[in-house]
Image 1 (spheres, rainbow, N blue to C red):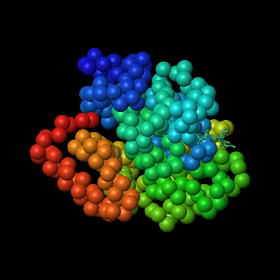
Image 2 (spheres, helix red, strand yellow):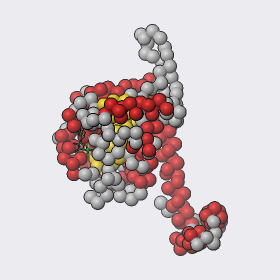
Image 3 (cartoon, helix red, strand yellow):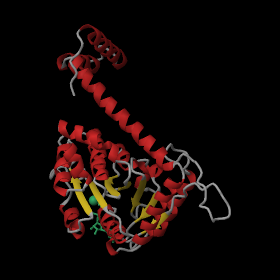
Image 4 (cartoon, rainbow, N blue to C red):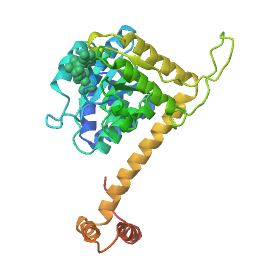
Length: 344
Ligand SMILES: Nc1nc2c(ncn2[C@@H]2O[C@H](COP(=O)(O)OP(=O)(O)O)[C@@H](O)[C@H]2O)c(=O)[nH]1
Ligand SMILES: [Mg+2]
C-alpha cells in the first residue's frame, strides 16, 4: 500500500487509471487505498459543472480546461455521463472533443460509467476525486448532467459549482426545476450566440434575486476580511455572477476562469473552504452510514422475509410504518441474539 500511495502521489498515470478502475468496480483493495490516501487529499480545487443535457457542458469543460492549463494549473477531469447508459460511458463526441487535451501530461481525463444506482455513483465519483486530488492535480473539473437530485448532489459537493443554462427555455428555466439554482456559485448562459440569451440572463438574475444565496449551508454567510492594503474591511458575501459564453467558439471562457478562481480565493479568504469540507464530509459520512445500515439489514433479515413484508404492504394487510417497525425490531433482536456476521 505504501508503494501504491507513493506512485499515486507522484501522479503515475497508469497507477491512477488502475486504481480508478478498481474504485469504479468497488473492489475492496480500492477502498483500503482510498482510505490510506485520504491524508494526502484536500488540496485540489474541485469545480462542478452541471446543467441540462445539450447545454454545452462538455464543450465548455474542454475550453475551461484549456484556459486553466494556460494559467498553469494541472487538471483532473471527471465526466459523469448518465445520458448514455447503453454504451456504459461518455458519448463518443465527448471523447473526441477531449482529445484536444489528452496529449497533455498536466491533464488526466476520466469518463465514468453510471452503471448501478446513483447513490453508488456519488460515492464512486467522490473517491475518484480523492484519487486525483492525492495525485496532485490542482483543479478537478467534474461534469454532471443536472437532471436529478443525485447528479445535482455530485456537482454540489464541489467547492465551486458552475451551473450552465442555454437560451431559449424562456420562463421555464430547467435548472430551476431541479433546484439547481440553489447550489450555483456561478451561473453561465452558454450558447450566447443563440437568440434569447439576454432574456435567459435576465430570468436567471431575477431568480437569484428571489432566491438569494446565504440561505443554504454551503453559503454560510460568513464574512471575508478584505486583504490588507485595501482601506475598508467589509463583509463580502459571494455574489453569484451570471456570465454569457459561446463555448464552441471559446468566447467568455477567460471571464469564466476568472470567476472560478475568484471563488476559490473567496473560499480560502473566508472560512468557506473549511465550512465546505465540513458539509462535504457530513454528506459523505451519512451516505456511507446509510449504505452500511442497509447492508446490515440485508444480513440480519433474509431476503424472503423482507419480501413478505413488502408483499403485505402492497396487499394492504399492513401499513408501511408498522412493517418498518417490525423489520427494525427483527434487526434489533438478531443483533443481540445471534450477533449478525457483518457484510459489506
Ligand atoms: N451554437 C452553439 N452551440 C454550442 C455551444 N456550445 C456547445 N454547442 C454545441 O451544443 C451541442 C451540445 O454540446 P455538449 O458540450 O455535448 O453539451 P452537454 O450535453 O451539455 O455536454 C454540441 O453540438 C456543441 O457543439 C455554443 O456556445 N453555441
Ligand atoms: Mg456532456
